[in-house]
Image (cartoon, rainbow, N blue to C red; front, side, top):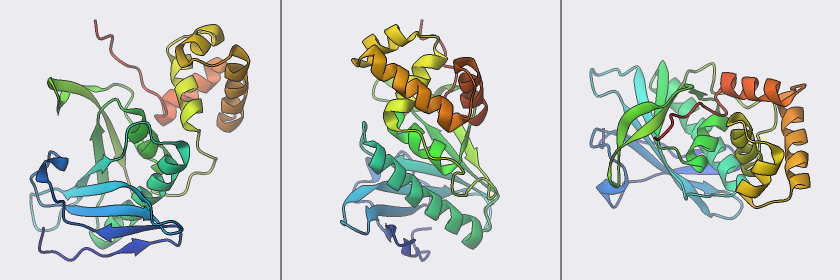
Length: 226
């Protein structure tokens, strides 16, 4: 698909510039693909790279796979802006390529996971075992999918990266004291984050918040590495 035209996309806040990767090893895919570099319009700063790989079978693919390159530990503003860019790319692909679904298979890395969550991807509750290649061999990966109905602006404000960390710890059954020690913050700060999480998820309790987070793919149940 390297010879196919790739358009520049923009929504007034972020822009997607067609790109040919200088290093083919930046992504594991060798199939035909569409690649954009996402930037903020206001500053021109780069947010990350978006890579769409249409199903190679047939002339009119109905599926595509999303891959994202973003700095690990990206701050909340970067995650939100990149999610906006990914949503823009996916919306264009659904319309221009007539796709039925876009899938994502990614590592247990919070920045990527936060991006796909905010876009509207439905993250499956259990990871796929040994699904992708890691630095030292196959590793587990999270699987998510997006349909045209899902690719819309979120109805509620997204969780911040820190709130997502707290919510993930809540889903692991950790107390406020344990979360504070784990994240290196005060217990009072944890309580404030929990309160904000309950408000965002419109949940009456911690248990209800975790159930809603599992249902919507904000967090998932991880396998015990042991």
